[in-house]
Length: 93
Image (cartoon, rainbow, N blue to C red; front, side):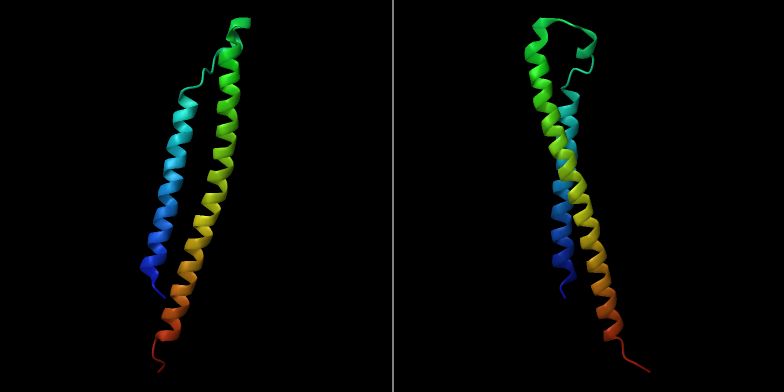
């Protein structure tokens, strides 16, 4: 088993996760969190933009949740297989 290849794949997945978190933060920082305080009809463009941002953030939240699960499961499997191969490979007695 080539552990370094699997760890490199896991590193790529982790990099994708970090970029996804940064992109989510970037989108969230560009929202107007106080738009609900004004009840103006001229804010329709801003409200529509925020609805689009909310859809993107929801999609990124789902992606981040599943990607975290995949990375953790992948690392557990890599560790389990490496431990098993190490245990089988040790000389007995």
